[in-house]
Amino acid sequence: MSISDEFACCAPLAREPMGAEQSETIAPMLKALADPVRLRLMSMVMSREGAEACVCELLPAFELSQPTISHHLKVLHDAGLVEREKRGVWVYYRARPEAIAALGSLFDSVLAPA
Image (cartoon, rainbow, N blue to C red; front, side, top):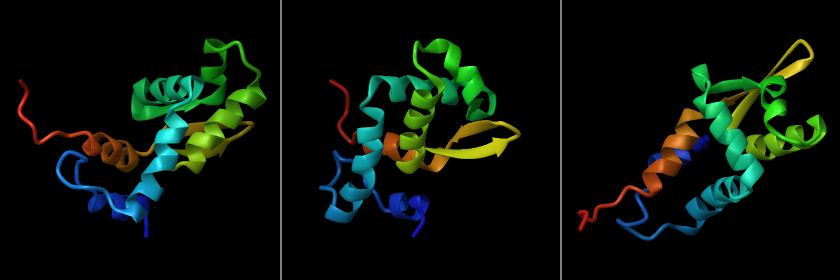
């Protein structure tokens, strides 16, 4: 089952309780984003044209080594939040729209604003 298939059935948290299988799929994504560096990296990737960025474009924003940035991007990849593609010596990361949309839909509220 693909991530998009797994999320297709996920109702917003405010509508109905989440099942164990769904929570096991979503928890690693939330955990990956809970790190400040990974959250910034995800924001940087998503804010670029095509929601894609090269490691080389991300490095200057941090006082971290390239291997450390690559490790954080690997965590985002392993959690299903980004795809990666090697082009020459660099790796490009692209946000996975279905994963981002699924995470966003979890927090859609059926409650009317006060």
